[in-house]
Image (cartoon, rainbow, N blue to C red; front, side, top):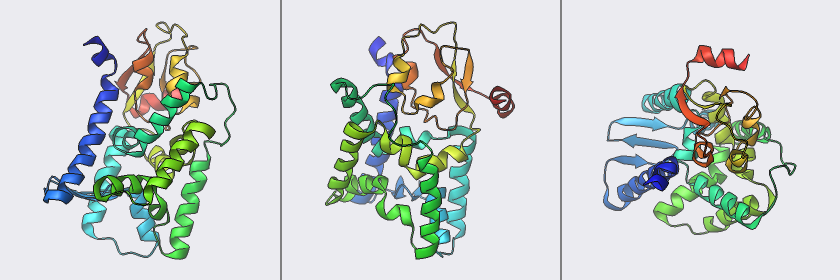
Length: 274
């Protein structure tokens, strides 16, 4: 039981991811109405629209007219990401997270790279990719990222069959394994970058108690966004960085209990970041 409790967040994340994908799969196979659509645009319980803001923005720039249902769906998701979750989608829903975390775990097992190894890619690349994606959507009248999105490929593959999508996802796995730790999720993915901007002041944050810290450095080994841990071991603080994906891996590997999940108001976040 202690092992289950220790990895409760990991188990909860994987269960959530499988339930989400399973719901779409059963909806396609049996016509169940719990959720219909895809990860970009869905209808929950037959009445609540959910629309990914980044995908919707691309569609709008491509020249599409947005319906009221789509705009309501965008508002619902923006509220959740902006007020509650931040990059919650990245670690709790996105199927690509399973691929990249598996690659990172195998990378640690094989001893590939080190926490001090220089990054081949800047973490700001994803924000440039956002700008490029929106520009291409406007110029070519297509939802640029959705055409090549590995998130969409993984989702469609699980539900309808992978086809050639296998090769792209396998290439992403090997890229993360041999070239760049969390190369896709931590450096390139524009959806993660967009959600980070939206959820900068989301209320759920990870806090660090320096008095409990034993400087094991385990959190640095598992965190997909290592720069957010710059003050760990130096002072007690709230991790206010918008890049935190709320995966809680730092909590799970810290035997001293120096990390915990907290609800932190915007005023306190602003004061912490000042």
